[in-house]
Length: 459
Image (cartoon, rainbow, N blue to C red; front, side, top):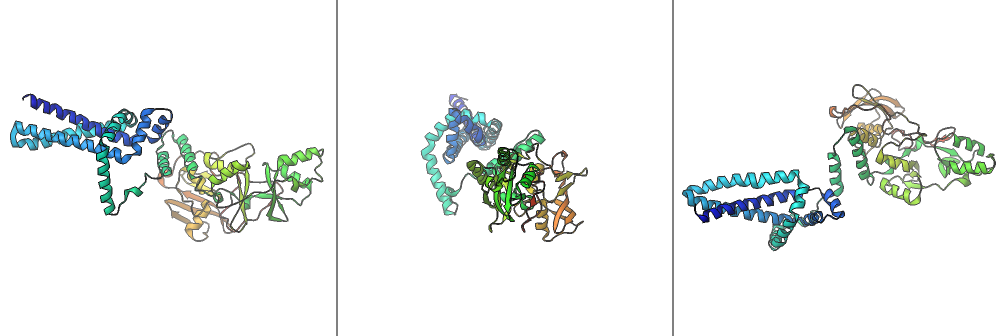
């Protein structure tokens, strides 16, 4: 071969290298971690900021890379065809087609893309300056091509200007589900991260302590009796009612009462308990957890009474309830635990009817729907469309539900058999959703509302 032919071989090799660069750059820039590069850019990494800038203009980036890749691939194939025709005649077309297909596929596509896929962040940072120059140089051509493509898409009814990159919350949920590690630890981390994203979608009605489990104190009783009932409670805030348990007139803080008792030399007689109580705070049952958390912080309060659209008291919600939705059960020395879930050796679970679906989904990574019901008993009632008898079984969502106990029209205990792939070995410690009773002692229990699906102890 003469010098011209050797120059053509060298040009083909250079073009193949350029093709590999374009292919690898495309994969690296699209596969690099958006979150990690954003963090690096905030710390002052200029190349990371450059990658983020390129990815913000996806049309220009992809257009420039594809244009450059096609140019070098077509040119290298044309040179190889010309060279082989000169060497072997007309058969050179077939030889060039086969040889260039293999070379481009292996060395310019699969190899660089495989490397870029496994080292996406590193590769993206490395190629960013060169790709940026390519995008700038080819921008007039890519802009014209983009305009033509969008025009054609509009003609067939697909306007890409209305297409967004998607919901970032959905992207985060996908990343959370991909989080891997030690099973027990990672399971709790995934539950916490999911709960944070759900705060704006969950209403206080779904996590509140139902009114049937809220025990308030009659403010018309003698002060001595009120003090005795308050001291019998393991909680620091107690609702007060007057005449009618639905007529909540205040929220008594135990410290305020004890401070007044001490000021009177330990004699509680004559104390105006109603005057010591704070004004009750009523919130609608449709308030989201995110909004309620912000209001708790803004008002510097920890306790609110939940009412429905008719003003009827449905229950109470506390700051601790919302925090438990994020971090899981918070136990302190005053909590009274009630076992709501009892795992069985055969892989089934005996569950009290008041246990919430959100707690079950969080603890065991089930996926039972909680849109129409908040408790496990409520879900069975909703799906069965009737009040089941003891011993009846139902199957839905891949689970089997057997009614074990019923009190009047209320399901109080069920045996739940999850799908085979969800039967995992579980600790027999505090069950999910177990919460302490709101008040104890001689206080009067608020009557249950008509919307109750099952009892749920207070947070």
